Length: 262
Length: 157
Image 1: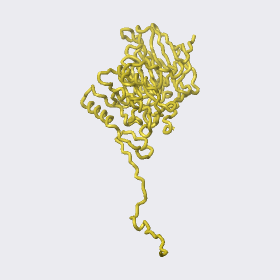
Image 2: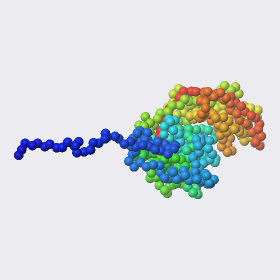
Image 3: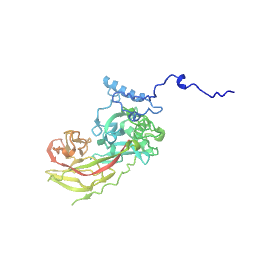
């Protein structure tokens, strides 16, 4: 055997020269007014399984717009423009505020009865769990119960909620309250359910709406977690829905000690 | 912090409406204000005033747990006398009331043009009606917005 060693042809002579590796960035193109998702803000690729806003949300908005053009008063109302939650008339609404004034939107559900205390339901993180609560505004203007951060003065209306057919606002609110009562705050909290495996406050709002059969004109697809509703299995089983369980308004803090003056 | 935990600590200066400078208003109750989750330098505030007029008494209540400046107004005797107000007299304030309620609620927050402490025209303007809806009196009560410490809460997604 000769002494010829292995002498391969250099790859550079076989392969055509490659351009320098460049990372193809995914460019976010939202519709006008559409909220930029977290992954786009961070300059990341969309998470696996990410989809554009749900057809249902788009459909409700389009239906509302068409109905408004046609003058159909019975159809779901289109989103009011920056309507304050403390200035709306009787009805059930999705209300929202931006976290710390400039962050993403946090939502709540608010019920303004014909006669009686205004109430709202929302959820937030506490000890790693997604904890819900009910707040109340009485006729003299006193805020009680939980979640004072979602009191009507703090939020704007982002959509009107239409109860299931044949159900009044009052009956529907009782159904929502019953679902909230059965929810035991056992679900883990995650900031962004679209890239994590649990739920946030907007998931709770959307989940309780879906489970109760209501339809909202609020743009949930624009809210972090709005496309990932809390699954109905975490809320009341069907045979308990609409039974109007009393919701104990657990006081958030001891009542102040009033001192009567002479 | 918001990205890591879903929470952002928010601070709010505590404001409340005071009628202490109005000589006709008598403070009949005081209480420790308890807005928010954690409070700093927030003290005791007047929570109930009474203003005696010819034929009726105005009662004004400041809720010490509320986060935003406002008060509830009612009149005694009710329903022989009742209160009525214009709902949005200016961009900084609003009145609201339920149907057939003895109370009207005056709210002062969310003033888009001026922060509460800069607003000059601070008057509670409303009417007192009799049982038939006739105007018995036009009230125009000056008030101040006082600052008293601040409080913190967690704003979370």
